[in-house]
Amino acid sequence: MSTLYIVGTPIGNLDDISPRALETLETVDFIAAEDTRVTLKLLNRFEIKNKLISCHKHSGSSVFTGIIQRLQAGETCALVSDAGMPCISDPGQELVAMCYEHGIKVCVIPGPTAALSALSISGLDTSRFSFEGFLSVTKKQRRAHLEEVKGYKHTLIFYEAPHKLIYTLKDMLEVFGDRRISLCRELTKIHEEVIRTTLSQAVTLYESLTPKGEFVLIIEGAPQNDNEATLSFEDALDLVKQLCDEGEKLSNACKIIASKTEFSKSELYNALC
Image (tube, rainbow, N blue to C red):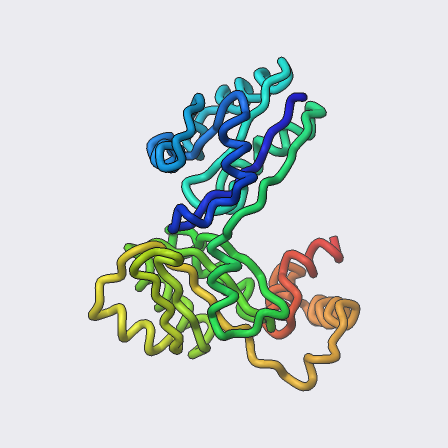
C-alpha cells in the first residue's frame, strides 16, 4: 500500500535509532533525504542498501510532485531529515500536506527531537512551552519575532546556528530582559554540553568564546504578574477593544496587549478581524 513514512533519525548518536526505523528504511521502495550524503552514512552504519533521492528546502516543486506520483503508483517512501524528526523546521511539512490532498497514507516512525531532548535537561519549566524554531537572519524580522513572544509566560525553545548565536543572544537580552537560559549543544554527541546561565552572562561568554555546533536555546517565560494570572482571553480582547476606542490601531493595540499577557498578537488580531 502506498505510504509516506515520516522517520525520526538520531540527532547525534547513531545508536539512538529504533529497530522500527531501521526496518522501515530497509523495506520502503525509496528514501527521500534532506542530504543524501548524511543519510548514506546512517544506512552504511547499519548495512542498509536502498534508493535515495534528495528532498530539501532548495528542491523545486517538481521533486515533491515526483514523490507524490511514485506514491500514487503504489510505492512506499521514507522521509528523513539530517537529524531528528522530519517536518520540524524543514520543508517536509509541505510533502505531508500534499499526501493528504491526494489521499495518500502518512505514517510516523517517531524518533529523537533536539527541541524536547534539550527541554528535558534544561532545568527550566517543562509544563508549558512554545517551540519557535529558527529566528530570521534579518535583524528586523528577528526582533519582530522576539517582540511577539516576549510576553509569553511559558518556556520558549529556539534553534540557532553558531555563527548567529551572539547576535540572537544580544537581541534576546534587549527584548526579553535578563532571563534564565539553558544553551544546549551537540546533544547525544561526545561533546554534549548544557550551559545554564542568564542571557546577560551568555552574551558575555560568547563575546569571547567562539560557539561550535548547533544550539537549542531554552529560555524561561516572562515573569508572572498576579494581575495577569487570572486574565482570560476574553479579558485580553476587551483590553484591545479599549485601546482601539482610545484611538489605537487594531494591530498596535494587539501588540501592546500581547506584550503584557500570554496571548500572541496574531491570536488577538485574528479573533477581532
